[in-house]
Structure formats: structure tokens, C-alpha cells
Length: 280
Image (cartoon, rainbow, N blue to C red; front, side):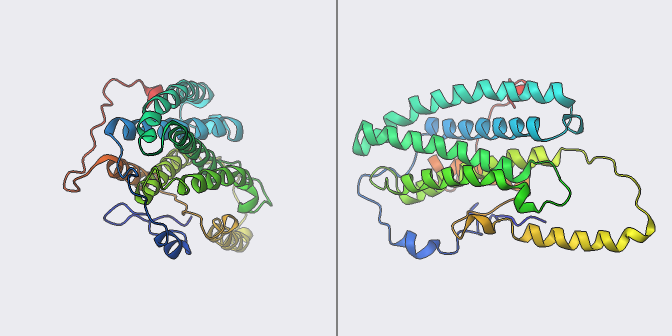
């Protein structure tokens, strides 16, 4: 199985970068920097990450997979993708309108706008990366690293946005930046894993009895590839996932971390009663 980031009681990813501890401890928060978001800003980020992630995963599924193997087929896939495309645009506009004035408080409008843009690009890069890590067409003779090659470029964008945010300690406190990163990361994996999990396996021709040993060797080779799926991205890689439910748990937990001052109250109310299927 794919290696996962694991969530402890606080919803923290425990397969954190191996060299992260000392470097982060050396970074001090600047006085006046923001440690929590207003709920409206946090909710806006959750919606932005959600729609960026679903749009990226459904777009990639449309291009890379046989739509006939997905629930509802090509027509349903296109309808959902188009729905999220519209909602992504709305979510980006809402994020900029809500985040920029809030983030401008400590250091002014210029740095506030830079933070809003960096977070938006972080969410988009995470969405594109996770989609490429999980949604691809199996090709005989190709290693997992080759199938996931498209994930390299968006991860570089993710690293760039993450580096910019870490320079903004005068605007956002370190723990808030970490919660933002973990929320967008969990959203990306949730959408990608959900699409991958809902793909029906293509029918395979029956193998002859003598092929059992070859299949066992192939399975062993697959295990070796899967163990190495994080290696191409270096020691700072936040961790991969293959569990969409765990991803959702992390997303909701990080959402409450963004705005909740009192850890005794960690509920999140999401009104889904009026949403159409294409907007889910």
C-alpha cells in the first residue's frame, strides 16, 4: 500500500519532514503576527481548497482515465468537472476579498495581498500534485515513479509557495502557516483518493495456471515501487495518503485549528442540504 501521513489525536500529520524540527524551532514568530483566522476567512480557504482539489482531480480523470470505468460515465464526469470549474472561480474571488484585508493588518496591504496569493497558489499546487500522484493510466512496463512524473512540477510550485509563506512570519505565525499547509494538503489527497477509489477495475483476461509465479514477482515489484513513491520529492515532503476518509478527518480538524481558540469546542457546521450533486 502507499505510505500515508497519519493523524494523531490532534489531527497532526506524523510523517512530517525528517529534517523539519530544528529548522522550524529556530524560526520565531514576530510580535503582532496573526495566530488565528476569522471563521469567514477559514471557511473561505476550506472552500477554495475543496473546489481546487476536486476540479484538478476530475480534470485529470477526464484526460487520463477511461470515463466508462467511473460512476456515471463521461457525461457525469464532465458535469461535475464543469460545476467545480465555476465554483473554483467563485472561491478564488471570495478568498481574495476576505483574506487580503485580514492579512493586511500586521504589515499593510502589499504583504497582505502577497500572503493571499501565496495561499491560493499553495492550494492549487497541492490539488494538482495529489491528482497526478493518484490518477493515471496504468501502462505496462512503466514504474510508479514514471506514472507519477506529472506530480513533479506542481510539487515544485507547492514548495515555492510554502517557502514564501515561511518568510511571512511578520504576517502569520508559524503554527497558523502549518495548519494552512496541512488543510490544503489534506483536501488535495481527499479528492484524488476518492476519484481513484471509485474507478472500476478493467476486466482482465484469465491467466494460465503457470503465470502465478510471474504475478507474485510483479506484486513484489509493485510493493518496492510504492515504498519509494515519496523519494523523488526529498526530505521535506509532507507525506502521501491512500485513505480519503482520513484525509477528510484531517481537513476538518485543520479547519477548526484555523479559527478555533478553545480546543474544547472543535465542531464544524457545514450546511450541505441545499447543494446540488455537481457542487458537492
